[in-house]
Image (cartoon, rainbow, N blue to C red):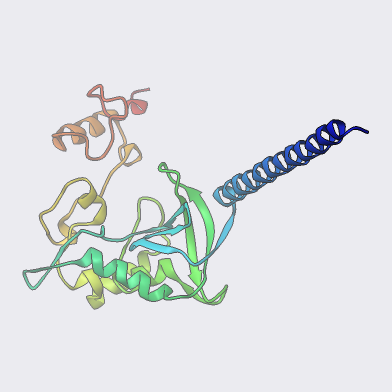
Length: 237
């Protein structure tokens, strides 16, 4: 074999090895990407999630890219303020700190109940295993969240006890978190505040339409889904 032939064969072999390495590298990257996608999809659809989450606010956690909303409770927004003895205080910040204090550095186990319209997993979460602390229940029992009656009656008893004992936000006046998110800022007695309503709260379309028109401007109770000025059209049939 001539020197030229040896040179050609050697370089061809090198190129072949490099080509194989590139193919293997590409396949490994593709395999890893598939695993990551599978894991993310699996978590999004899982019945249970465990890990050390980041506390977003008093009723929300984040496990990596997966958001979890605590089932059956509604805590003050992070920037929300409340009144105590006519003095404003950062109840939203305190509620977030309260949830963070319950979790500390523990692993959190969440059991899925539903998925909300924002794509978040709605779950009951605990620390300390199956016999540990129910975070949802503790937040309401300590007065750092209200029972989200519109979605679940699970924590109504805990809310009643917290209110009577004047714990957390019940130590003064506050706007319910759902009303705060809709733009209401004037603090008032929670008992004086109207509960959110949906079409199931009305017996007739006329009753729903009258309430809808009284609640203007806007549609704070979201009774007019297609924004044509007619509330709860399903009741007309």
